[in-house]
Amino acid sequence: MAVQSPSLQDWQTYTATFNLTTIEPIFEVHNIILDTLITDKSLTLGRTCKSYYDLIVPSLYHDLKINRENFDSIFYGLTREIPRPPKKDFSWDTLDYGEPTYKVQDRKWKLLKAVHFLTFLDSYSVERFLYRVTDEFNSVFEDSYKPTRFRDENLGRIFESIEHLKFSKELMSDFATHFFGQLPVDFDSEQMTDRHLFNSIPELAFHCQPSSLCLEWPHNWKLHSVYLEDLPDLDLGPPHSTEVIRVLLKRFKDHCTMRKYNKNKLQLRLHVRYHDWEVASHLRPVGIGAEIVVDFSDCIKESGLTSAYLGSPFRHDREVGWEVGFLFRHDRESNTPRRFKYLVRSDHDIPKEIQLFDDGTKSRRDFLSRLHTSEEMEWVCACCKH
Image (cartoon, rainbow, N blue to C red; front, top):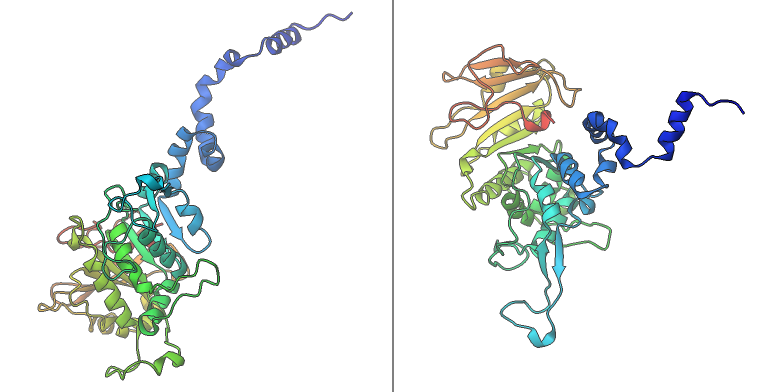
């Protein structure tokens, strides 16, 4: 019988006595293995135990985009219906007849509290959000679907860390249509609702309370001729989305003042194209009281307009107290351009062009890139950074 080599004998001895204590040598690389799994297999590792779930999943919610496809998965598990008490213990003082009560589930709530950048991509998700909060969180606004009630202390704001809230171009177009036509959204499903889309604005303002609100301009939006017949005669011509945005901003700002919210910190941004500059200039935010930044998607060279011409309609009005800045993308083909051009107005109404480079420095030091300070304005929109 052939003599076994010492290495083979050692291996057989190792496998014969294998147990958890014999893998201690990998302890030194244990953290490296976990870091690799978190990077490459984060969702798989998050399903293994609650500790990894709480470690990994919140980072996936940092920048959240909500639409028809993912709405149910995002909000699944946020609340749990509380069973009704036995009939003999039923009390009119503790429970409304015919309406269930809900309790917030902490694990999903913590995930939604981790959201910093939130985008609503369509009207379906916004209407469903309204449906969810008015039914399960009890609306506190008189103009919402249900009567005014005091919100339960355990049912507070859904999003508590929102820095930037964005409404997509599709959503803004639907806002415009609903504003003039007051049309119900046809979900083409069992979850159809007839609640007016604008009723969602107070709830969005309350549950998000962002530092900045970004609106994508609904380019070339027009109300269908079938709805124009029912509208009253308008002295300013046919309905335009400018009216919609003005009312939307005003209503959003009004409901952002709840629970000691600093209304002066809200920054409003409009993403438009260069040929919409004249329309944007008529958007005088009377009563809004927040600074507005107009972001032109086209670079200044492609606009064919001089900086002085573009800057002329936007002046500081001391009576109204509003001021508008300009931003031009350097590369219109890039979703996250690395270099920006800005057109801003100085104290002497002389437009200045400022460039921002990859490292965050600018060609001029007159304007620092700091968010929500008393004298400076953050020119790069958060949706361009993420």
